[in-house]
Length: 373
Ligand SMILES: [Zn+2]
Image 1 (cartoon, helix red, strand yellow):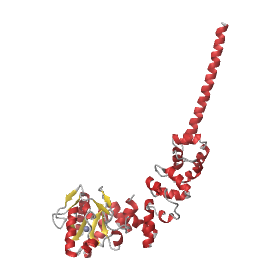
Image 2: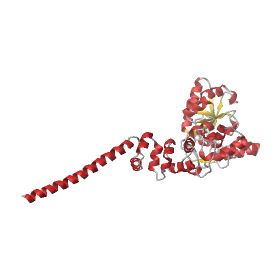
Image 3: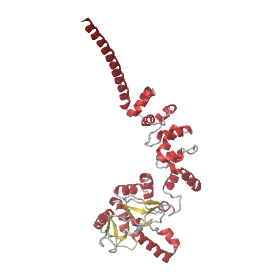
């Protein structure tokens, strides 16, 4: 009886100890969970939150609040405690080596705001390459322009020194490869889109052909051999019909031209007027917008000279409502690379066409500012 009681007492004692340990573990767990959740609620990942706790930086992080760069720093194996304050002041970018690159840029002596600017103007590869350079002073001159590209830095400097152009013109020109010779080292376009840029620096391949090519009824064209991308042809027909209501008579004189058509065209002009003429006035094969099926040379059935016709005045004022822009306007020869062509219209869609119409800019400028990445 006595022995039995003793046994019970020791069991109770052991249970109390186990219970006590469990209670402590539970308390630690609850405390730990609440600490973690105070961080995760601020947007920190579980992994970052765990590392924040174990490096005893919770109070600092809570004082900063939500901060994506700080989160990335704690998630990264490149994290360095001595740069903690800088991390929190540098704008986040979704880049693979973000923290490693920030560390290097800090070591080179760049300020937090300059580092933010550097990160914002390139992708991970651009920034990683940039970190290998010696420190550059006065980066702001080019990179205060939102579409300046980090990887073009040397070309900006060269172009600006050679031409004496202002920073904005320099960035625009270099981004458009205008510092390169015409037709040399072009960017090759492989995907069709209604906002693609084709010019003397951006070329289509020899076998490129629009996949929605449709022939154009001779009601709308000078002959029955014309064709274009369906979306552009439909837009032209709408424009044609509305112009007709105002007693105006539009006509498509030239439309889709294949790569080979352009080869033949260049040959013809070369025989007629010589190589110099071709270089200045005719796009080389692959570099003509007519190969996109989105461009039409428009004429008037009431006048031999389109630029002097009522149709021209109407088209200038209304084409954007159908998605067309005058692609080579007067005064923009330096940027488009072509002399003014009042007859050459390009389909880019209503949104872009309207913007270009309202802001009086070239498609090159629109492309460099809004579409080029
Ligand atoms: Zn044309």
